[in-house]
Image 1 (cartoon, rainbow, N blue to C red):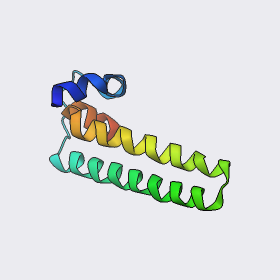
Image 2: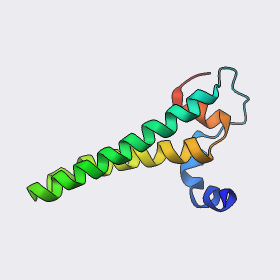
Image 3: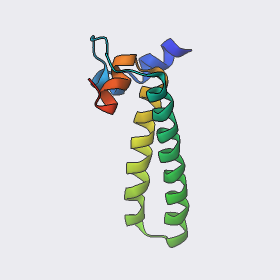
Image 4: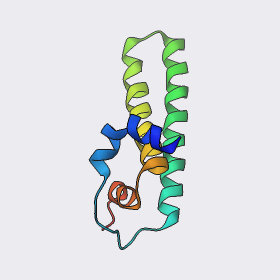
Length: 92
């Protein structure tokens, strides 16, 4: 299943993948990235409910931004290598 999802989300993963072995990688970085991604997706759901309640089309901009940020974080956190997780946090 992981290989199928990796093939599906390869355009996102190729941005962050590196062939280097990260020196400062910790398992907690991956856990934190998954939690932050889940929070962003949850925030996009709340924003979409607020956008639906107000009926304004401009309220969809935060929904799209929060969902995209959450999706990238969850994909890299779940499917990315240690180097990709390290690169998204900016640790070298």
